[in-house]
Each structure stands twice: as structure tokens, then as C-alpha cells.
Length: 169
Image (cartoon, rainbow, N blue to C red; front, side, top):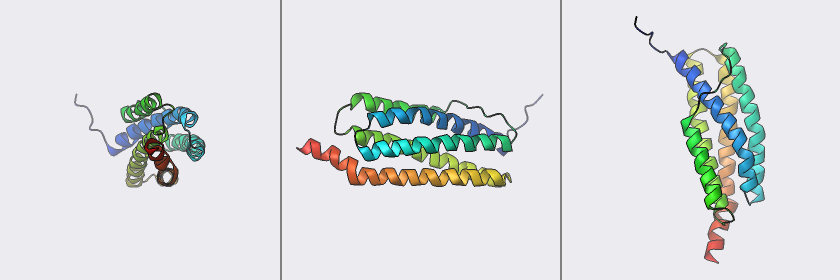
């Protein structure tokens, strides 16, 4: 008996499980990044995003309810790789003037992944007629873009200069 072909519904659900896992991994990683960060602005950004991530997880759970599925994660190799890279930076650059620049780069890699996922999922939710899910995904997408912009501003106004300045001294 042939297997039924997978549909956009299936792909949406699989991707939802993937981003759910990713958000939970990010939620557990952000306090470590905050603790490792040296610049107060970066610590504050990680703290703020930690709170937002908790809300993102709750929104994803609402989307699981909309599609009448149990909220369960599926290991996201991409986010595991990105967070492992961040942990490596924390180890290798501890106490270094470049630590915050590395943490910021890792955080932005996470944000770009999330922006990609949420944008795609919003488009699919729209295609599937999941209007309530579209609204929830839109909210999270806007917050992820704002966090990315904040991280860019911190990089350009504080962190990169500190990393560069101390090395030149």
C-alpha cells in the first residue's frame, strides 16, 4: 500500500514542531548568554529577548491548538548548531574584548533563522486559511525583526568598537 503524499498541512506541522523546539532551546540558552556578556546593553537585550521568547513559546502553543495538535518539539539541527557555536564562542573568548561581538553574532544568527522560519510559516498559514495563526506568527515575526535591529544597533554603537578598540590599545 502506497504512502499518502505529504501535504502543506504536514509541512506546516513539522515546521511548527521544529520552531517550537528552537524557541525552547533559545529560551534556555539566553540566560547563559546574558551571564557571559560584558556590555550592559547586550545583557539587557538578552534579558528582554528571554521574556519575549517565553511569549513566543505561548503563541506557538496557541497555534498547535488551532491546528488541533499536541505541542511537541522536533529536534532542530540548525538551532542546535547555532547555539553550540555560541557556547564555543563563550568558552574560547571568555574575558576577551571580542567576546560580546561573538555573542552578538551568534544571537543574530539565531534571529535570522527565526525570521526565516516565522516568515515562511506565516505564508503557509495564510495559504492554509489559518487566519488566527497568521496573526500570531505576524506578531512574533515583527518582534524577531525588532530584536535583530536592536542587536545590530548594539553591535554598531558599542560592542564592535569595544572589541576593536581594546585590541588596538
